Length: 292
Image (cartoon, rainbow, N blue to C red; front, top):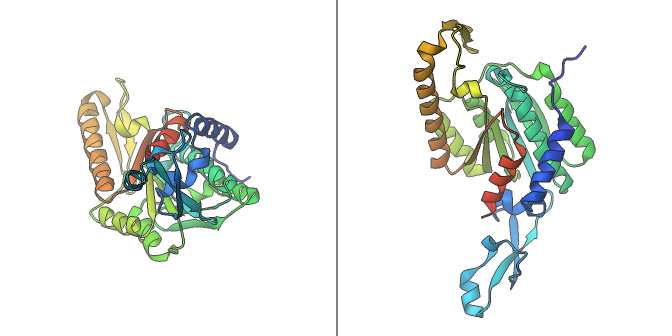
C-alpha cells in the first residue's frame, strides 16, 4: 500500500482563503508576488479609496495636481514554481505536523490561489539531487496532480543539499518563469549558499519560506536524556537537555540569524514560520507587507 503524508488540503486552502479575504488580497496576487515586475504599465488614473496606495505615482500626481495611480495590464500565463526541500530534516516533527506536511499544506494553499487566478504552478522536489519535478500548468486537474505528488511519502527523506537545488534552479529552469518560492528549514547551508541564492534571485523574483519545528530552536524541558541523530552522517548523540539546552539554543539562533542576513543581502523576502502555529494569517500578512 502506498504511504501518504498526513496533509489536510481542504482545511489549508479554506483557512488561507479566509485570511486573504481578511487582508483583501485575493485580487492583488500580481502586485503581491511581482511588485510590478511582472506587469505591463497601461496608464494613469485618478486614485480611489479602494486602490493600493503603493501604486500612487507622486511625481505624476504633482504635475497633474491630483492623486494618480499607475494602472497595469495583468500579463496572463504567469508561471510560478515551488522549490521544495524533501530531505531528512524536513520529515521531523515534535507536534501534530511534520515539517514536510506543514510545508506541503502551505504550498498547496498558494498553488490553489495561483491556479484559481488563471495562472500556472509547478514544483521541484529536491534532496541531494532532483527527486521529482512537475512543470507549471493551469487548471484544477493540475492542482490534483500537485496534491498527489506532495502526498507521496516515497519522495521524502533524501540527504540535504540546498546548493544543488539552487544550482539547478539557476542553470536549468527557464527564464520565462515569473517567480520561485523556495521552501525549506534551511538547516543545511554552507559557504556557497549565499552566492547560489544570489544567482537565483537575479534570474527570478524569489521568495523564501522558512519552515521550523520548535525543536529546531529549543530543546524540551525534561530531566530525561534524548537521542539526537544527524540525518547526513547517521551518527547519534545522547544529550541531557538540562546541560545542553542553553548552548543548543544559542547556536540555533546564531545560525538562523546568519541565514536570514544572507537572504537580506541578496534581496530575497523571507517568511519564517513555526509548525506549532497556523500558517494562513502569517502568510497572508507577509504577502500584504509585499504590497506596501
